[in-house]
Image (tube, rainbow, N blue to C red; front, side, top):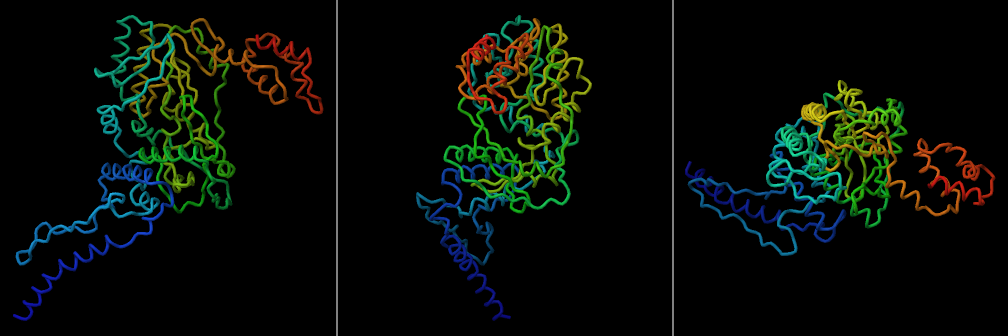
Length: 492
């Protein structure tokens, strides 16, 4: 027994020494990633690590980047307390073990209940409103102005500039009561309740796997894609994936947004759309919508914050949205731009939410919807109903594109007001400044823009006849005097 006790004490004393040696061996083992980066530069890597840390802290996950060895805080009586091993940190290297970025993101940003609409929207909205982000406000036309829903001027909304003080106070009071319906940043919206609407991607029969290789992107596009991936990862709109049978590409062209110096990234889903069963849902006629809106005294022009991405994708179909880029392969948990059935799903969703208000005080055009009435009080009452409906369904509005209690506004490229339907002067000024066309393509370009307002041009077809003849097959392009006269007449 005495020999056994001595051997036990010897093992207990040697144990911590062995653990310390193992700890040093693990941390001092050379990492091939120290010499090069397979995906992006160190700045992007640090940014991704920060995003991952936020996700780990938010979901209370055990992060794999924590130290591999944790000394026992309560050593046994016969053991001497061992000091925590300290490793010297070089200034140019991280103290944490370095993993390939794809493995880092896959280890932590995995699909979770928050990605499929099972999160609590109350907690997200309250947290967002308690710490509103700093933002740069765009300049407004003369008939609009900014108002704020808090005392610190950090929750801006856009309202009419010609309201009486009493009317403005009533309007802001309604907006403050329903400010959870308005979003000021990407993380403000949890997504529309999946029980109301969820996007499905149904495939044609006998479809083979579609795995496309990523394209080379120029530095400008690469930088935009990098920022977009980081932003969507932080908002849990995308997640890393490695086993999808359907992989699409990032478009090698950028689309400018309405915001100056801003770009939008699109995924090339053409191959996926060819293999998708089409959803034929009727969309509204532009003329009917404009006629319904014209002649009213007050309007609310509302816009959903990233309307497509507020709709969840069915969990069994999320892998079909996989896209590849230089930073890995990712799949969407929300409906992205570019899917062939996305407009039908969005239109159906809006009808389900506002079915009892349509054709009465509201018109819906995709994620844009307009409220109207002939009096201030009636319009304010309808606004309260709509905002409450948005809160109940988790539909979030974009504060930058919502105009409250205005007397006129642009709808589908037309100006609607109590005077009726008019042309948008900003578009007319562009058409009026065009030089004479020098090619068939420029003639098509001009006729397309001028034809958009043909309802305001009497005898449009007769006036445009000399120009349309240039579009006929086997006709020599000759912009003669009749063409010049027709061109100038249509410009005026």
